[in-house]
Image (cartoon, rainbow, N blue to C red; front, side):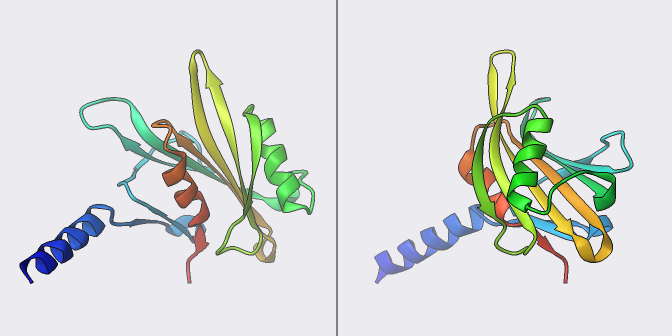
Length: 164
């Protein structure tokens, strides 16, 4: 009986440590889930919102995400969401673009995995593209996984959803 309580407590505690955090971006009515705490930072642009998770006592980051909002008619992206997402990744200069898939919570959303090569560093990057044709807007999110944790990056990329 005592072992059952200890096992139950350990399971509860481990789930607590792996808790999800919801980042809500009210300005564009989107949210995404993460296992780490993100803080907003100034991107220097009115059209780009930035969030990052810094390593404690360091200027280095585990993750960073930039979300850009633009009008659909100001960009020349095809109606094929997969093709558009791949094109964006290439336009941003990322290499080795791998197909990701449709976003599970957004009908007109897609993501790919690519890599940012800078000096001797290769950083996995998820590019998320969402079209909201009802209001003629699109969102492009670039999620940098500086800690190389593609598994958690994938969870974050796939968790995007519109606010209710």
